[in-house]
Image (cartoon, rainbow, N blue to C red; front, side):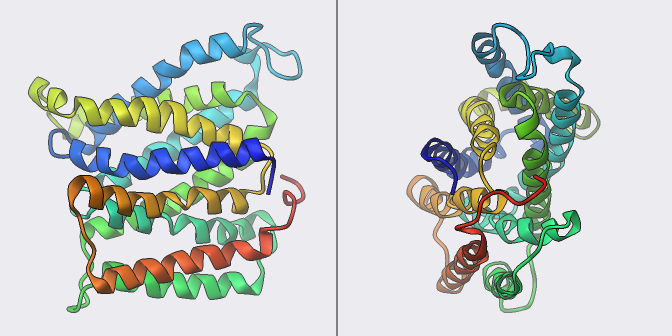
Length: 299
């Protein structure tokens, strides 16, 4: 399962992300989704600049090439930034009409999607994965669809977010071992921030009062969720199978429900709790075939 340091990095990432659902939900009371994501991403990128300068004083990659001339770094950072922009935007839009805990569990569906999407990259998928997908669909049905067979728009947005985060994990898995992880994370945040701010100019009208009201959630999401957690994800994934890494990250779903209940008083109905249990069981089952394997060939 990778070395202990990588596991601890990913566990801390999951914890920060789980609590971040609360920050994101509260922030949406004051500003729009693109404003929130734009500001927090730029903060996350800015926080990483001194970390990058301190940790890479030579300004070179492992091969001795200057970072600014590393095409893999810029390509990986840009692609991660675009996918992160799409995923985080869908998540923020979804949080307007769904709870923090519910969003956390739906987002965790990416854990099942990672090995399924891996099929398109030539990675074999064990039969048990398809059982996991079926179980996850049942869990999502109980969690998202009410008795009148209606699904909230917010749930659909977060489900789209889960698919995009699965792509994000696979992009990181491809590029992270080949370049400087902190630098790639820094680039992805500035790309995500620039795209979000561009959308903000066309779709939202943020106010100084709104930004002031959302200051604490934005700072948490920017400094910890972006600057710290996403960087820990990139560093932690370097020596780990992406499917196993996604299992550890899936713990954010449990933490988001607990944080939503403790901080916001958001409780789930019995039907939704059963859906959460089935979905999490599917998430665990999906990881069993890969749990004792090393990184897939060609990664």
